[in-house]
Image (cartoon, rainbow, N blue to C red):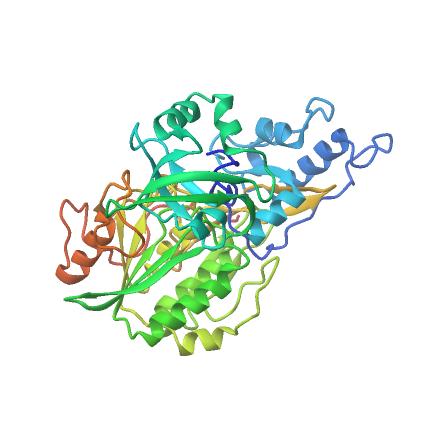
Length: 451
């Protein structure tokens, strides 16, 4: 996925969940010799390593010390010292992190699938206020050409990292125009122009209702991160679902790589309502230097950027209060997406449809030093029965392939959505690994328990 054609890299970056801090110690120069200039690379290496020694979840696997002059970047230092099982920790410029967490991006505003065919490029999704969305491109459409270049050539260039691919897409310049031709699922051919520009990512990509034998089913497509703007988007979506008197809900998290834990808590509260009021949402388990924190459904998490736009009592008053939930998942459903499933399972039946999730029951609290932000794993999240051991992912109860995008959000021509509705109607699904989930105390020991 190249930045010129796919405006958002959020799923790649926001793999971690924000937390309260749990007594985390921020970056400090206490261990830096006076002859090392502040914000020089050796200084940053030492400061970040000291931060890891105090806050990293796997602190006992760190080396005893580092050579501050051995690493050209903070990321190189982190990569060298982090635990072998750590797939998620990273460092990036603070300005980039601010853009990601606030949902700011640049480009045409579309995500493309180059692997489905050699003759067309499938649209996985677009953002509503970006060039691709404004031109009329939607999930499920097939791009036939860009400029005068057929899709077959574009696919070949993208797969081989040919420079002609980037040249075709044009410079990262606001207002740059690119002609496009695509085919709708009904066979209609559309010719229009895509315009590059700044994008405010929308994480709610679809909300609708479907008639079924199980009553009115709500559908919510929530993709591309649990971000700062997501709280307001979710509140608006659930106002619609509440007013529509839905009896069931299909929550689509297939491309949601995670983000803020307080947003995952807000989403879970909208769904379960009175079933979770005054009950435990999560326990964050830190290393032995830091105490554990418990979070409850009716107490907004003290996050880095709290969103107080709507008090939680208002959410409870219009919550759906569902008895069961169906969640669409894939290998890209990660972190905060998995938390929604795991945190709700002690209180209601949660059935997953699709494929196994990414496997990230751990998270990080961002910290900043010298215009860099480090997101290093510093807690494991366990649910109300103490379970949080899904490092291999949460297995789909009803396996459905998501390799081919054949329909727009909320369309029963999508096999995953159709399977979800069938499950709600019949209580079963074809080739299901298991039927739903009945909460019971976890037998697996969490990765870390405070001593």
